Image (tube, rainbow, N blue to C red; front, side, top):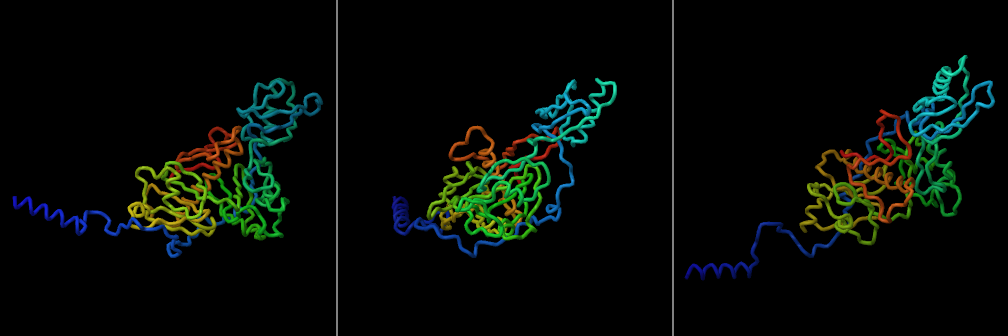
Length: 386
């Protein structure tokens, strides 16, 4: 009986004084979100530097592919002149030929192949003329805030500035073409977040320097290069990585990290929450902060407010080298943008208003053209896991 009385008194004392159970001792349910401390943001230099080869035109000759239009004629025979389209199988069907595979051939190589094929049906080896009339197999993507955005054929070497002004230049508030001498204060394009994507990697082009007249940023483009100029007024938070629905979250005043995560369905199992990255500023001079999201969820640390344009990335595993981590975040971001914008440009039916959800590591490629058999080259906007 005495023992029961002692236990009861101990219980009442614990209730009165506040019983301490294992767990975070600093938990405060009134902990309010705070602005991300400036001291927590670290300026990191992107590791990929400008390769001098990017400023040189390609030495490779144009090669044929599906959809390309050529005109073929046998010299001395006026009636033989005919337009021909390279088929989806990479073959052309001309005259009596059953089908000549010209995929990946130069015009001169295709000419030789056609002449050799016609020799089987003619007494003397003919002389054939092959002229290029239209290109569909090689394209560059110029999307975003261009006057005339779209997918453009690539017939020869072209610089980034030439391609930009072929698409009408960046949009501005006057509705007319802009040029490098006028500056870009009135542009509707966000040059600090503009980028060129090639084979799933960001090229080190600084659009702000390019439009200020720095020709060291004026690279030569290649087939399937993706050039994107985002809108300067786009108020979004981009959340990628180990979340259920990677997406762009509309920015509202006092949007917090927890709210942005909730908009994406939360994190996936086994996500590494101790090093959630928040990237802020230009893609070429970004600042990155590593936030312990697990401590925020536990209430040990306050939630943080996000800023318009922030990129939030949840890793699957811990990282040690900050510069490589930032490269991964930036590459994932621009790849996802390329996939979504490329889908809008190529799909016959527009995607739903919430956009296309591309899980990290899905390896999805959106490309308007095929690659020659055995080429194995990744298309534009491929997202690959670390």
